Image (cartoon, rainbow, N blue to C red; front, side, top):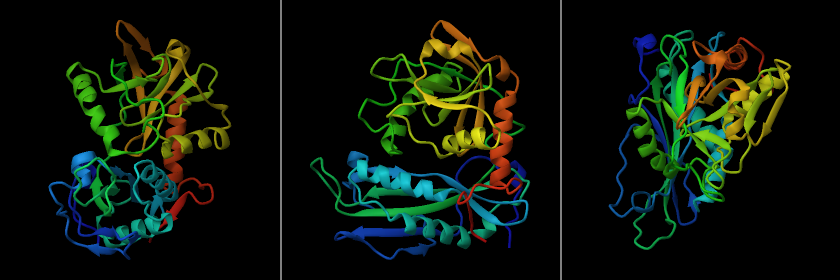
Length: 340
């Protein structure tokens, strides 16, 4: 039975739901895992996650389609990305097939928390993995915990997506050969000072440059980025230190195969920004967030198609991808995982 919530006015924050999934790694293997009602974690004060930030996470959503099914969008890619991240952080990957099964099971147990179709709200799903046992020397943990919790969240943008303002900060997001390409918790900790500073100065987010040359566009603190040229080509930055966004990869597929647009993934230099007519951030939470301006110190870049609302191409991308997610448009094979 669906929970009695004011779904349309739900914010984007944590709300405890009834069940979560837990699996422990000890003596070289993962246990069988279980569903629990306990949202608390008890760990030693010297746990590796607390001392050396050995942790990673994922984010995806469950929602109701137009036909009433509860579904998730491409959870196999979340499973793969978490496995890749775990290997980079010297953690045992949680098996990808078990990851998907755990997502399905925890959503089924919390099915009454999945908001109704048309409310704009969804059930956010947060899988995470961390080093659990005490350590003193700098080394990987020996014991780990994989968990999934859920929380109903409202639409990221209430009243529609209004163009945001970015700035080019003096900070770097990721080093060459570092961890920019994986979803490690430490990446987000390092971005907090920069985002707080940006907010104090009146900006919505930071757009980072490559740290080696500080000439090429990479991504923001929490999202990949796409651009649209004046002849409607959809372009996204290419770099080994960019997180492989599932939303961005899906949008590029949609642009080419559903909308018939030319697409390109390549290095994008800061000097090129004035040549694009549209710009948007892309990620799980908002799908697409239009960008109106980028402040590069004393230089202001305006995107004429996104000053008041989403640009034409960005809007088409948004409508098509959300249409696929919500069951209005036929999805490519394997993109939609039906839960109930």
